[in-house]
Length: 489
Image 1 (cartoon, rainbow, N blue to C red):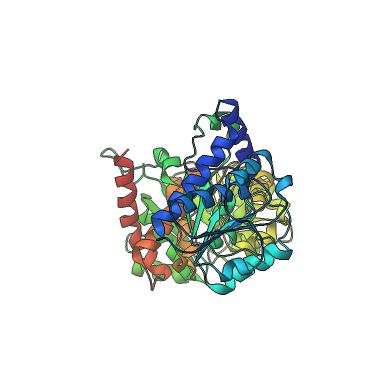
Image 2 (spheres, rainbow, N blue to C red):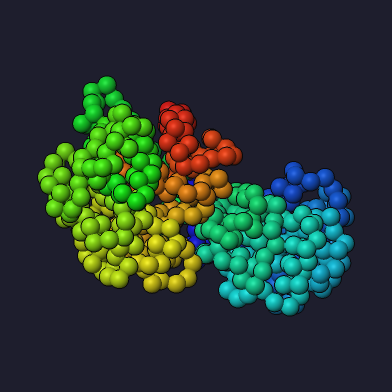
């Protein structure tokens, strides 16, 4: 159930189910009944207003109204549109509704203790306006609990963008598979709890669709995870090299802690000589090497046992950082580029892209760093996928809805990150975690996905009051939880 379907792919799934012998009106009936069951499971009978739109989403609303009415709920139905123009299946369900139908208006909210938003589904292409927008705004103003069908009206299913406005639902009931908009901000914030109802579409329809989008989950990468075995030693578990800066030394120190905690056999930090003691004082097991110039760094790279390199956290925006990145790319090791290692190429991004394309490399920008390298506009998912295709490496665009995009078009949206991760230094920990996984042999895409999920799990385990220094120490517990998931398969 981790696949995410675009609007076009969901239409294809519906069509495949119909071609397989399931009547389309039956799918609508099952969907509406499933939504009604979810509502009854969460709320006791109360006055409920069902808001029905002019398409198939509205048809679901008519089914919901009928099932709640049959269960004894006080149901009022409000319709936006003309019944004569309803699609065939929605028109059939409208005919089966025996109650009154009132025109859509904000008064629908004033009379209700629960509102069901079945106005517009995930395929909405233009901003809400008129009575629909006024009614949706009234939901937000009133505080009346809302249940959204498919997505909250106004949320675009492929992008998570809000078109005109959208209510904040307590529950969203969708069908067969979720859409990207259920996970992408700001849409995900409007969805509340999302339930994916089984409406009888067989999973085999996905074979013909071959979806490229998924929610990030261990099921998708845990078979690539490298667990310690009895025959392993520190060299077989990988040797990572991190570039440490002189102005913000804490960033590389956080990254090194995470890389070691996640399982790397050895981590060396290349640092200015005057700072070596700062690193080893708090981490006796950390190795350091002195360097000041790019020539010094090139000499360090001659040791082929250093199988992965992280550049960027606290490195500084200067010529030395620029030259180090190009040197690291040239030797063909696995690379993580973060922060300053990205910003230093803002005047000539193509120089970086030419150097890294096709390599086992992960870029980990936040939105600001991303905008300095890439000139794409639009929604987050599309921008991340375009960036990965352009530069030929994995692009991890950070945020509460982190997107991990592969050059081959696949992309994963993370959904387990708690808001406590929004504090300085957690990105440095993430970069170090990914480096630690890369040097142990995980492929770049899987390492990026695992690093994001594990850092989020670690943060959630710690709870409130989290600062970046807390994260590496929580990684063992996150790993233990991952191991339990793996062993339960």
